[in-house]
Image (cartoon, rainbow, N blue to C red; front, side, top):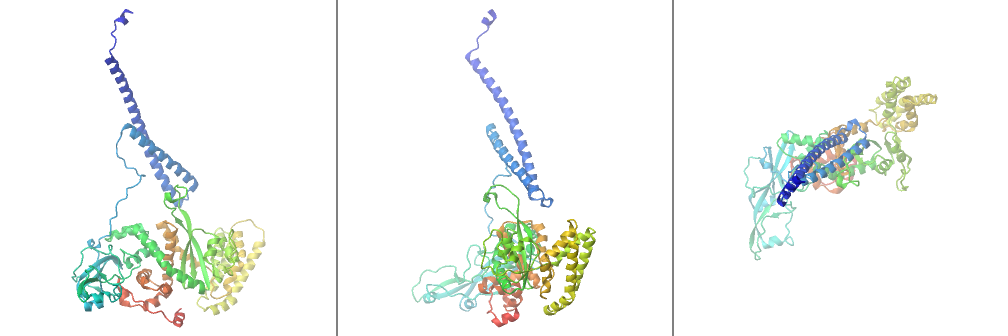
Length: 630
């Protein structure tokens, strides 16, 4: 009691110091704990990001492994939510501890940088092709004072070129009466003449800059400086620039030859745009894949008018249409534009190929591989259609509306089905590979039918029909008699039963080629036409949307038709892109590959050989001559 009484009582200042020291120790302990928690969150966030990247790669890249989409998608969604939760926790922990570090979020929104503007081709080392645009009328009445230059990126066999359009600028003296004589001050359209000039020729330039991106081409003369009003009877000086020729794409940076090279690289050779971008950069020109995608979609949509004109003619005149289909991947689009706002895999679309006799080849994109799509695609055609025995064609050949669709009285009579003996032979070949004797016997009989018909390939259709009745029909009758006898015997389900069942179910369509000498006994031509897509999709993988796929179908159609008629697809596309802006819309059929050789022979060769310039449209052929050449 005495010791406790002798102990000095702490002063208020000492008590305050002790309290502050205790609070400081507690704050230090909490800070250490918060730092440990922050470090742990950072490690968890890094692990989650790594797992997310792995799942994304497995989901979108490794398609050949055929991973289970539903399970992978669920794992991806859960990992995506976990990353979002960890991001919020990490941000909250950083704000509490006062960590003001700046971090780069790989999933955060990117700042959109300003555009780089139009590329200056004058800084490149590309060979120059100079084309001068002048006006004969002004050459006789005005004085040349310089040129206004515009550059395009073109392509010739051997490499890219810088196409320089030198538009002659004139200085002319005009009276007020002349200026207003055409009505309301509008000048009459000028005749433009284009010619290629040596690149070493010096020429004065109105402006050292490329002014094509800043001004719109005009169909009539362009006054650079509007003179002030002058009294009647006096003259004024005006500066007139030769107008630009018509082009298919407004304010285009690429010349038609370069656009044609890009299109044939992808839609003929199967080169994806990212690889073409690298190739062009090595050749001395920077052209990003986004620009190429936009040109491809615009060109496909525009050239679709030619494809549609050819398709209309084919449906009116074709004797038999051969068709087949293959699948392609379609990107689902940005997440913000989807209904569920969730990431997902590519969906599947389909390309149908249609061969119209030996005249045209068409590719048509359909989002769904259904009977409704097939019935709509062949609406109005009532002659022969050769296809495989897929169920989606049943409603078309029966003439009934697809399941769930209303009856259409305007559809007309259904087409007649022609079977494919190659599909029938495939089933027997599979049975023969598995050492089934009936498979070997069926394969031998079908090969005999093919060999007998092959010897008649060079005969005219009428003569071929007679020889088929004498030589091929007995072999076909013997084959189906053998197939019915073997199918009547009881046996287990398997490859042999499948082959016999397919042959007997398709007996009437398989016999159809005997009805007319123009019909083929196989649909291999359609299969070969689809190879361009089946092989190239391993490189470009997918299409960005249904619109992109539809535009690509038009380009595939023109390229395949060029191959059918022995045309150079790149030269054809380059010429058509030049000619189409001048061509009347009701005569687009003349630009189809089937008629292009005839149409090109009637064009002015000197105009068409230039990279750019005006085109003179010839008069349409008389109806009698058109029918004769068709």
